[in-house]
Length: 343
Ligand code: G3I
Image 1 (tube, rainbow, N blue to C red):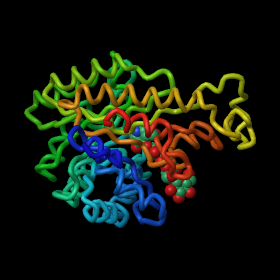
Image 2: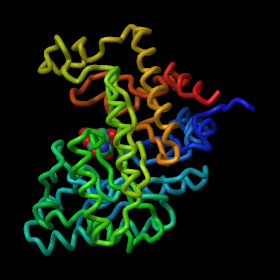
Image 3: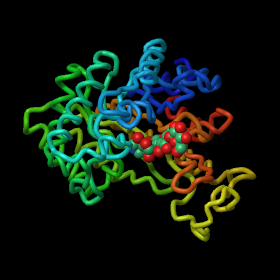
Image 4: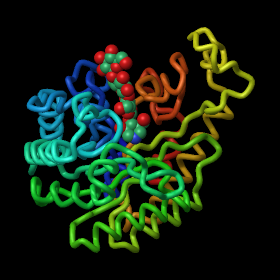
């Protein structure tokens, strides 16, 4: 056997390997990323440019430039595009948030899905049709969609997406939906769509997990549960953050970039943490390989540590290390551990 030289190559018989793309990456203004992305990945998800706030800023105005570039870039490199996302309570344009009457809101909802999904018909492989509609306890999240349309908005979104873009795979995407209560809510939501005779092809488990605390058992139970509904399962936004969320011992109100708790490893990441992250990623990919008949894609939420959303969130100045490539695009121990599983 020949040795694989990249993630997508190593896992080519198992599942797609994806990454989120930010604006400089889509515009190929980041030469190191431009060199690495087509080698390592065969799937991409736009990190922000297809969100309603960006692609549909006014009632009658759509800004497709960047999304068109993304689709062209992917086609050039034979990369599959997962559209992200048609219906999400967050990143909604101001005009949509301000709509008061139900009929106008329904018109916005319908127009948005019709216009965006039909533009990329045959050009995107799949859509995250609805994103993050659930609370942690499995109930429907309070949102303008629930408020104006009722909980049938999820089914309606899938119905409209199917009409506008037949043949495109249609997914529900959420975080923590590997956790038992939220999983139950997710199963109920999927069953409702299916009972209405509307197509849903898969569930995305985002996979924003924490070093040393990856919930392997919940993940495996969820893969099995979603598969049992006849769905494909994807890990859609994978990262394993290295810093604690609760900033033990830190003054979280001290928001300056100089706050040492925001960047505790400025002088180098302890090897033990890099090894722990490598073990976490390797154990995850072992699990994914065990269920490769059910999992169709594993997408990382960003190319390298420096480009991850976890750097600025929840506190500006925070410096995190959640991905497989470091800030200089060098593969980390986690990369080698994931590759070693296929040697
Ligand atoms: O591009 C503007 C820039 O012009 C402006 O000056 C600056 C000032 O705030 O904002 C920039 O936009 C930011 C954008 O990221 C690009 O960096 C937005 O404020 C910021 O809110 C946005 O954050 C994104 C976040 O979703 C909210 O949409 C993150 O990049 C993105 O990684 C994150 O992704 C989400 C998934 O879509 C859904 N699941 C959770 C995941 C993580 O939150």
